[in-house]
Every structure is written in C-alpha cells, then in structure tokens.
Amino acid sequence: MQEVKDLLQILNQPKNVVITSHRNPDGDAVGSSLALRHVLEKKFHSVTVALPSEFPEVLSFLEGSEEILIYDIDKEGVLKAIENADVVFCLDYNSLDRVDKMGEAIAASKAKIVLVDHHLYPDSFAHITISEPEEVSSTCELMYKVFKEADWLSALNVDTLDALLVGIITDTGSFKFSLNAMTLLHTSEIVAQGGDIKYVQDRLNNHEQEKWLKLLGHCLSNRMIIYPDLKSGLIYLSKKDYLDYNIQRGDTEGIVNYLLRLDTVNVAGFITEQPNIVKISLRSKGDFSVQQMASEYYKGGGHRNASGGAIYSSLKHAIALFEEAIEKNKEEILKSY
Image (cartoon, rainbow, N blue to C red; front, side, top):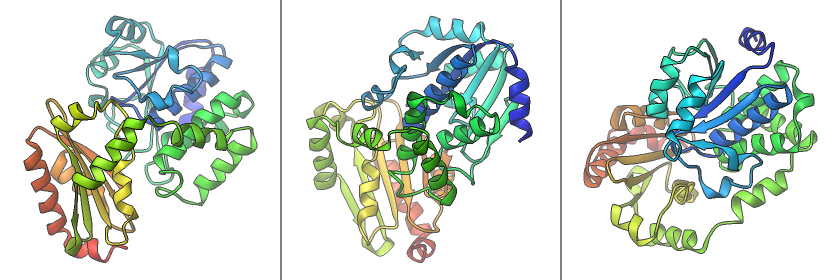
C-alpha cells in the first residue's frame, strides 16, 4: 500500500503528532485514536489525542482515555496542540466539517494531514488518504491493516489490541452487521495477539446505569412506531425526553438496532431532537442502502446498512421525512431481506 509507505516516510523520525476524530465520538473514533496513540508513542513520537466533544462514559475504561483533550472543555489546549503539530491524523471522518471548529485549525495547519477512514466519499483535504469504505467494518479494522502493512505488530500491547476491538465490536453491533470474512479474520488475529475480547464485550455491554434501562423501556413502550406495510420502524426522542431521563452523550447508542430484531422491520430509524438540530440514525437489513436515504433527506451519509444525518427542522418534520422516504422506497425495502 503506497499510502502506508508515504506515511512511514513522514514518520521516519520523532514528530509532534495530533490525532483527531469526529464530534460525538463513538467506540470506533475513540478506539482507533487511542490505538494509534499507543503505537506512535512506542515509536518515540509525542502524541496528543484531541476530540471536538466528550465521549461516552462507557469508553472510559480504555487506557489513555483520561488524557484525551476535548475542544468543548479546553479549546486553547486543542488549538495549541494542532498549531504545534508536525502531523495531524484525521480518524473515522471524511470531511473537516465533522470536527466543527477544529476543522478550521486543521485546514490552516502547516502539518502533514493523514486521513484514515472507512466512510464513503472522503473529501480531498489530506496529504495522505487511507480510505477503504467497502472493505472494512470500521476505522479500527483499517488501522489494524495499516499496522500490519507498516510492520508495527510488535508494538501492539493489550491496551492497543483492546482499543481496536472496541471499534470493531461497536461498529459491527457485536458482529451483527457490516461484517465479512476479513473482519472476522482480523478480529481473530487481534485476539490471538492478546486482545481480550471477553473483557471488552463485558465492559461495553454489562456496565450500563439503571437510567439507561429505563430509557430503553420508554423508547420501546412510548416512542416506537412500526410501519408494517413498509417493513420499517422508528423510535424518536424529544427535547423533553432528554430532560426527563437526563440523557447524556452516549446514552442512546445502539437503541436503533432493537428495531431490527423484529422480523417485520427491514429499515429502522432513530430520531433525536437536540437543542438546535434534529439527528437521525438509520439502519437496514439485507440489500437496502440507507446511505442514499440519509444523503437525500438528512444531509448525511455513511454505509449501506448504517448511516446518519442531521437537519435544522422540527421533530415533527424530521419524522415526516422518514415516512416520506420509506414510502418512496417501499418496493426496494420490501424485497431487500
């Protein structure tokens, strides 16, 4: 892979490195960032991980997570790190607008920019772009491939391997989607080298707070709409729900996937009313691509079976758009799975 050779040339001597990922960072964003940090520090680089906003508490078990800089909390610290960087990594996002104001600092930086991502249609802002939207499940899986290609596997300790597992597990929904034979092979290699998949699964799935279970019950009992004639389902949350259930960042992660457990649902939507914007997560079974649906109706994107977007509108309008989209794509949805 020529891009990896170019990367090795950039990193041929110790550098100041900043690793960034997207706003509302998930397991793949945090996992890939920390995994890369661990490896680069073993290669004698000075490394800072900087994220636009806070990450879910459930990911705080990852080694090094307590040292991540958050732009929303320490704007000056993040901007100074980017200004002083020799190399800036952009992980798990394909456009600088995904990191908000940090994007302006990255664009103005004199550093070499390296993009490592698995989403479709990356923008052309990086000096080196490593992008495999169709081949890998997650940026963590792609990062593992980069480590192999760079002959860096000897630098992977258990903290690095567990961080990689976090991204693969969360982006595949514990191996339920975005999955192929190579993902399973790479996962087995990570485990064979010391990654503790049992520990990671336990930390991700068995350490929720009581309020999360109450929120899930509310979603399934009071905020779920099933469209049986369209084999689709929707869960939505209002601003009031966020206040009533004290919903924090990461609390709604994975709720959309519960809809796909129904044999009568091929397409699932999860709409949340934020203070200034309405966000949607889309999931699908089989051959129907929600990526096009996210792009056309919600100015978003992603993957065939997992996409998302956001619009400035009312909650009612966002729900109406979802209903319009599934009606328009009825034939494809019905035969997709």
